[in-house]
Image 1: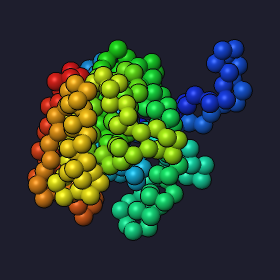
Image 2 (image 1 turned 90 degrees about the horizontal axis):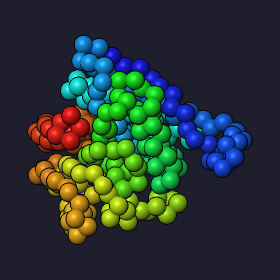
Image 3 (image 1 turned 180 degrees about the vertical axis):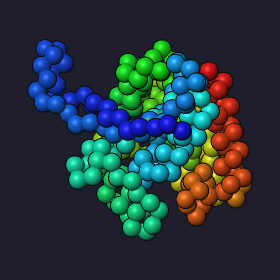
Image 4 (image 1 turned 90 degrees about the vertical axis):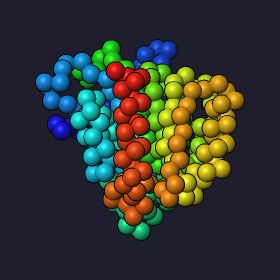
Length: 262
C-alpha cells in the first residue's frame, strides 16, 4: 500500500497555556502512515496502530499496510520518540533487541506521555490529514501496545473502538503512577480482546480479571483466548507466531472495526 513517514508535532509541557506563550518548541513524533489508493475515496476512517516493545518496525508497518488494504488510513506512531539517542528505533526479535526493548526503551514510557502521544495522533487525523477529517478513529495495539489501547480507551477523546492484542501490564502502574485498569470506569468505547492461553503476561487469570473489571463497570467488550497460542502470536517474525490464531484474530478485528468505524 502507499505509505509515508509523518512528523507529528507534540505539545510542549513547558508551554504556558493560559497566556499562549510557547517557551520552547517540543520535538516531533515520527509516525508511519499507510493509506488506500486514491480510488478508495477522499474520506476514510482511520486506525491508530500501536507498536509492540520493538518500535514502529517493519512488522508494525506491515500490520498498518494490512489495515490500509481494508480501506482504512493506518497510522503507527513511534512511541519511543522521547529517547534522545534514538527516537525511532526499529528493533528486531534477537536477544539483544529484547534486552534493548525491555531495559532501555520501555522503562522510559509514562502514562501521561502515552496519553499525550495518542491525543496528538488523534489530533493529526482529525485536523491535519485531509482524508480522515470528520471520520471515526479506531485504535489497535499489540503486546506493549495492547496496554496502551486500554489506557487510551479511558483517557483519550476522539476514539470510537479499541482492540487489545495480549496487552500485558494492564493492572500495573507506569513509572508516573498511571495504572490502565484504574480508568476502567471511564472507558467510553467498545473493546475487543485477542489473547493466548499459554501467555505469561497477560496470563489467563489476568485476562479473566480484566474482563471481570469491564463487566463490573458495564463496559462493552468481547474477549477471546486461543488455545496453544502465546504472547506475540500475531507476529510472523517471532517464534511465537501462530498462524491459525493470527488469522482468526485479524478477521475478528477487521469485522469489529468495520462495524464501529464504517
